Length: 170
Image (cartoon, rainbow, N blue to C red):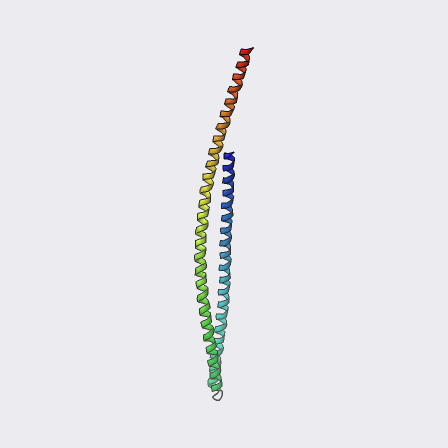
C-alpha cells in the first residue's frame, strides 16, 4: 500500500510540475505578444516621423514663398514659427515616446530573459525529477517483485509442509 501511495504521490508531483511549466510557457508567450505590440508602436512612431518630415518640407516651401512677398512676410513668418513650434513639440513627443518604448523594450527583454532562464531551469528540474521518480518507481517495482517471489516461496514451503504432514499422517 505504501508503495502504491508513493507511486501516486510521484505521479501527482509530476503533474504539478507539468502544470507549472505550462504556466511559465504561457507567461513567456504573453511577453512575446507584448514585445510585438511595442514593435507595432515603433512602426507607428516611424510613420509620425515621416509625417513630421513632410511638415518640415511644407515649412521650407512656405518660407521660400514668404521671401517673394514682402507684405505677406510677417504673416508667413508667424505661420512658420507656429509650424516650427509644432514640429519641435512633435519631435519632443516623438523622442519621449521613443525613449519610453526603448525602456519598455529593455524591460520586456530582461523579463523575457529571466522567464527563459526560469523555463530552462524548470525543464532541467523536471527532467531530473522525472529521472529520479522513474528510478524510485523502478526500485519499488523491483522490490515489489522480490516481495512477490518471497511470498510465493513461503506459500510453496507451506504447501510442501502441509503435504509432507498429510503424507506422514496417512
